[in-house]
Length: 382
Image 1 (cartoon, rainbow, N blue to C red):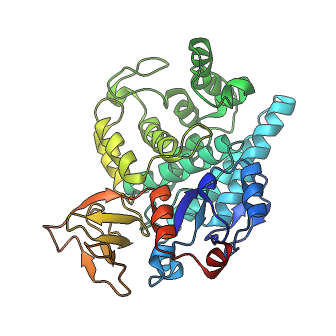
Image 2 (image 1 turned 90 degrees about the vertical axis):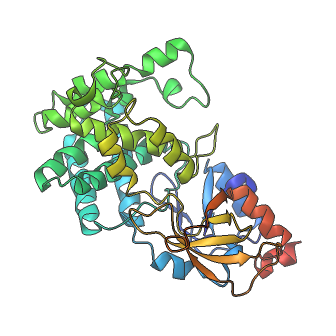
């Protein structure tokens, strides 16, 4: 399947995953053949992108590929967690009192599910409405941080502290004016200064909660510190930044880079991977960063790539630790001819072949339309 911007959708495309509103309401179910009205509806709900069936991999069904991808957390778990976080944030806005228990229960629920899938890699980014970005971001950072903590050998008690701190890392944003928090585009200098108060605001809020560990509150306080001491709010450096906060800082930036926003599409995983590596030792703890990146599928299953041979292939398998050398199936030969049953290539074995391009969703759509490989509904619509 392919993540596609809603502005690039065409009638006849088939949804590959369920689409939910921020409130957890099912808007459209997987396998829906989209029509113009449904596309307009998705755009109306401020959904920047959706997953569709990939027409270039019809000989490798999406179900076959998905069966090889153990999800870190289930779709229903993520939707439920986002709902709880949204409700808790909204209740705070209404009565200015933080209810800790929903966050504690959600963090533990997510932690338990991540523990049950220790070998899972991060292949898919979640689909969230623009209005629900903060809630989905909090859940994602919790999942990514917990996954990293497991790989670092944390015990269950440490994972509980880390997961809760990660879920609440942006708690201070509940005290930032909504017009700043939801602004589509760059912030002014004064708005930026206001936004940079959220770690302090979050810490002051969380440390007054008797049932929230102080180290979890420090995650909110320190998650914008940088490993070289140039971050905020106190300019902490290296190991003076709590390890939980060093983990959450990495998860926070990765999710921000790869998520769609009203003013930009998210970066592809391989692009985010390169950005994150470039920030080792400056922004991030290099050891923790390497542990984190080992859990990320740089070329997720289903990615369409061009090889140095000139062939175009789809990624079919990714092995942890060998993310740059996935297994693939060729779908176009070097001359551009579509192959019905192309050869399989394991880049971990074929060491002279490399990936030299990853096709964006927009490029995949153009290739697909040009080769008439959408379903019969699309052919009829044309």
